[in-house]
Length: 153
Image (cartoon, rainbow, N blue to C red):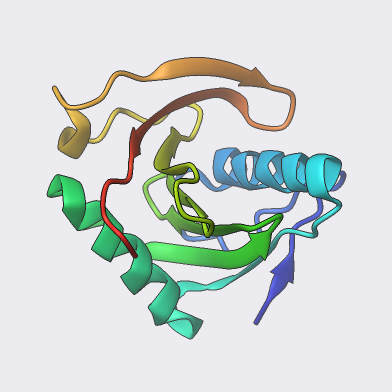
């Protein structure tokens, strides 16, 4: 069932089984606020089990860097805004992965990682990525990193 993310009344809907439910809800709300303020786009997620094609697309791109995650995917989202295909997956351990894929040739294409406030850096990232910190009223301290996509997807 689709969930329209409300960034004014943050809810843990869909994240109840995660030990980082509150932090993930804040992280998701932070993304929703960004897309609303920049594009007037409503951020909607669905359970990962209802849209396996979104998760498969993200995993195909992650394979470019030999990354795969053993964590349970809880929610996903995919949409197009301003000529950019965006896709998100929120994992049970507090990790959020997003793909920004500009549809026009030569546009920006990248994968971003965000760690929920309080979670440890997953072992899959050790020695591969440096994480910057960002403060958010909704999500606390967000640690993030990214890589540029080289292939065509």
